[in-house]
Length: 76
Figure 1 (cartoon, one colour):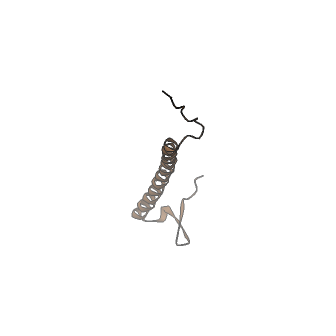
Figure 2 (tube, rainbow, N blue to C red):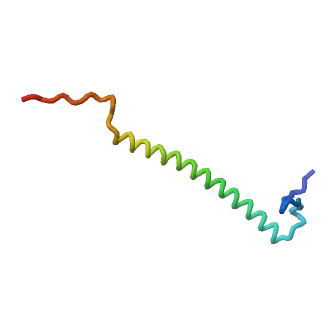
Figure 3 (cartoon, helix red, strand yellow):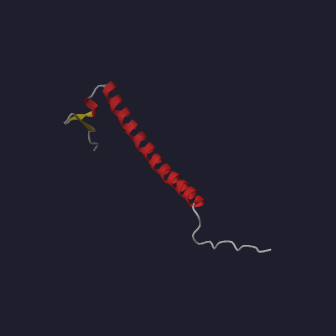
């Protein structure tokens, strides 16, 4: 038993099979583009985490170390 695929357009439900072939192609393309946007958003989120980690590493590299003892002076 297969259910009819439907889509809501302007608050009105339509059977996809009853749409024109051109409209069905547009519906399919919109779904593909939405999936692509979701994938790209995930990539952006992942890259933001990496970018933040690099930024934190840079900040840690240039701030003075609080745990280090000052170097002893050599008296001659």
